[in-house]
Image (cartoon, rainbow, N blue to C red):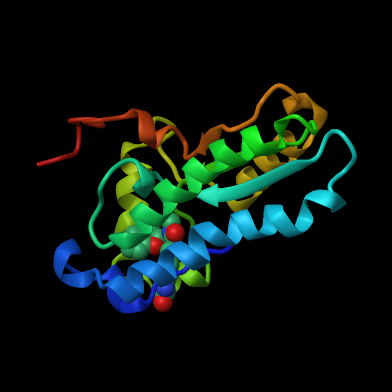
Length: 174
Ligand code: 0WE
């Protein structure tokens, strides 16, 4: 799992913030890197039942403030999961993504208003909270295991259900 866009790409109006160079860097590091990993690593995968897993985010499907070119890169990453799944399927290898809810990590500490995003998500998610790194790890363990032997090319949401909602609850909004 590796994702990156230059910091100036992740702030402000999408059109104004997005440069050709920033687009290139974001897609190279956040999407092509997974294809490169599959290319370099496929011969080292467990014979006949390997599993590749990457990390994505809802910004690939829906807009949110400031995520900008990372949303495009994650959309590309999720498409690469599908194409890689076909490419490696004949050899029995599976390729999936986990689309995680926002989590307070070191990288997230560099993101403006991240605390606000955490409470926004927790408030509106069906489970009424955010997810933990352990819950992402558990889903990854499942996807890597034979319990997920029939699952490939999929993006699995581990986000306390946030992605399935449109209006959340009317209870506490003004
Ligand atoms: O994918 C991510 C993190 C993406 C990210 C974050 C940074 C911060 C520091 C990529 N590149 C950089 N480059 C830096 O210089 N997330 C899902 C977390 C995240 O990042 C956001 C979010 C969320 C959620 C950035 C803006 C808006 C929302």
